[in-house]
Amino acid sequence: MIPKEKVKYFAPALLFLLLLIDGQLTMGAETLLDNAYYPSAHFLLLVYLLLIPNLSKRYVIISSLIIGLICDSYYLGVLGIYTVALVSTVMLMYTFQGIVETNIPTAFFGMVIFVTSYELIAVALQVIFHLSKVGPIIFVTRVLGPTLLFNMLIFVLFFYPLKRLLSTK
Image (cartoon, rainbow, N blue to C red):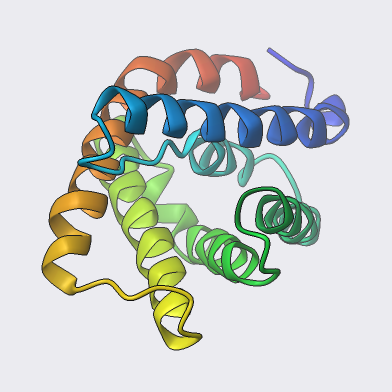
């Protein structure tokens, strides 16, 4: 357990490390599946889900903005897509904070909702700005479905250890 007053000092390094781990896991999964399916790892969203009760709204929104800009510059090369998606998803997490925080099954389904919203916002912005052309059937079957399955597995394996690490009680 990290003491509550020290969580804000460890959070930026942890979030940056998880951004890199997300990228590596995503590339590894795509390679493993021969680029037929495109699952994305979202450890970052899982940790934000656990950090929201412990940190101020301002701190988390600013950190998601900075992590989103780093993600855009590192992975996409176009600033704004993942920044908007991450900040919007974190704000959605704040909206549903009291509901999702109650128990593990609720957090699990909340994570499914947050991953879905993150992916939908990101792909919608890419289509709006003509950065990609993707049909809804292809998106759901080759991107969203595998991403949800991958993140369900991540949730089942890592929710409890991360909750113990980031809990302040």
